[in-house]
Length: 231
Image (cartoon, rainbow, N blue to C red):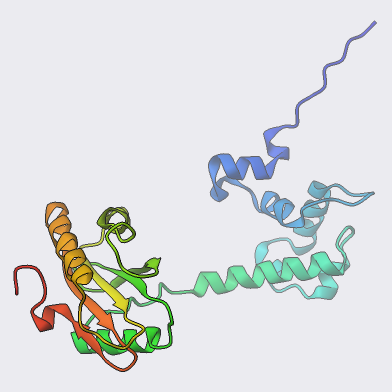
């Protein structure tokens, strides 16, 4: 009597697992197509369909030029799958020509103030946003820290600087709005700004400014002399 052992699927038959373990670069064109196809049909496996596509088009250059009719002519490819393949190919083509977006640069307090007036003037709740900058004052990221009235329990410097360290920010600008329209800093505003500057000094991250935004005007704490050490 013979005994049989079930064969585990070869790793080459598991393109999703291979991608997860080793990245996209190690997969063949056929394996990438298998992931895109997703599942086979009653009469054709995923690998057979992917192989048929590669044999029909010979290489990726001709595949990216394929019409829906050509894709549908391949056994196992219906209208929906043909559309998904064509969409994926178009997305890949656009990605190949895409450029890294040019970073917005902080040029002056005036530019920054008016930019945030446009962003926050219609807000009915107080929001605090941290703007993370590199050494060229280019914006790396804008992150809403909290929504609600400013107090030291909610707006803790630790949460703001954690992201600053993660993305290697050199400077920070703090922005928050006063829905009342009054841009005069409160005691909490001043105390929070002082804590931020002190924390930044320990980490080597400069607090460039703290803006208070009203509905039609703004206040730059640096320009107004409110920053810690400039009173």
